[in-house]
Length: 416
Image 1: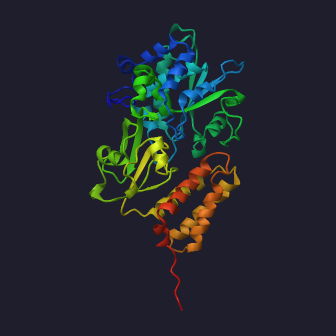
Image 2: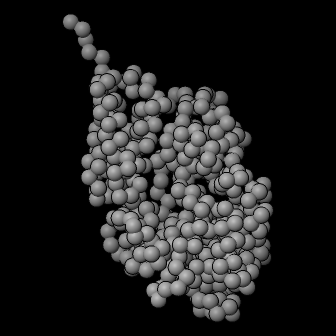
Image 3: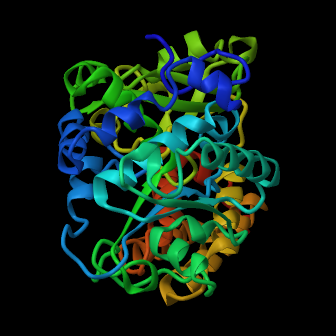
C-alpha cells in the first residue's frame, strides 16, 4: 500500500511542499460540498477512531447538534502518553499539514468555529513545530475568517498538555483546556451535549483526523477496501521492545502481528522466541507468543484473541524477558498517573503495586495471587474513566496467561 499518512516526501512540514503534493486540495473540495455530505462521506468510509476506542468517526460527528445557539468545539487529542505509543508524534513531525487540513474539514462538517489541538506537555519540540505549521496555514488563508472565500470561518489553537496521563481522557482533557484540574467528568452528559464550557464538543485522535483528507481524496468506496473490512484504512503501528527495527510503520489494518514483527520490524534479535506481546499500548491485555498465529492488527481480530487494538503500540518481549518486572513497571505507571478521584483506582492501583513488588522480591505467597486478582477485579468497571480498567487489564491478563511466572516467584517456606 502506498503510504497515505506518512509519505516519504521530505520537508512535508513546509507548506509549499505540502501544497505541491496536493495539500489543502481536499479542504477546497470539502468547502464545495454541503457539511452533511462531508460527514456522510466519513461515515460511509467506516473510519474508526485511532485513539483506542475504535468508535465510528462519522457516527460521532453526527452527535454534534446541528441547531444550537451555543458555540461548537473540536478537540484533537494529541496527548500521547500511553506507554509504548508514539505514532501521533510521527504525524506532527512528518505530515503536520495533513492533520491541520483534516481538522478544518472536520470543523466545517460540524459547524465548529474553534478547534483545539491538545498536545502532550512533554512534546516541547513538536509543539513548536505545530505552532509554525498553524501560523503558515493562517497566513495562506486555510484557517481564520472566510476560509478560501467560502464564508466559513474557524480558528485553531494549540494547547500544551498538563503533563499528566489522565489528560488524555477526553473529559479530563476538556477540564485541562478550561484551566481546571485534569479530573474526568461523570457521563452522561456526553461532550457532544455538554463539553468545553458547557458547549457541544467533539474529541478525535490525531491519527483519526489525519485520515479525513485521505477519505475525501480516495472516496469512501476505495477507502473501505483498504485493510480489514470492519476496521478499514491505513493504520500507524508503533513497534518497540525486542525487535531489530523498532519504529512507526504505516500499513493497512488487518496485517498479522507476526508479519508486523518479522517483515516490518525485522524480527527478534538473535532469532529468540517471542514470549509475549502487548498489542496496543500498555493498557491492552498481554498475549502469549505462541498464541499469535492468525491474530491481526484490527479491532475484531484482537478482540477475538482476548485483547484490543488500542493505540496500535506493539510491544514485543523475547524469551528472556522477566514478565513480573514488566507488569510491576506497568502497575507503577498507573499508580503514579491515577488522578485519585475514584477510590477503587486511587487505592487499588497502590495495592496492586505493593503485591506485585512482593512477587518481584520473591516474597509473595499463593494467597497473594488471589488477592492481586481480587483487587484488579474490583477496580475494573468501578471508576469514572477508563484509567481503572487500563490499570486492571494488564494485571488480569498477566495472571490469566502467565500464571507460571507468578508461581515460580512465590516464597518457598522451609519444612521443619
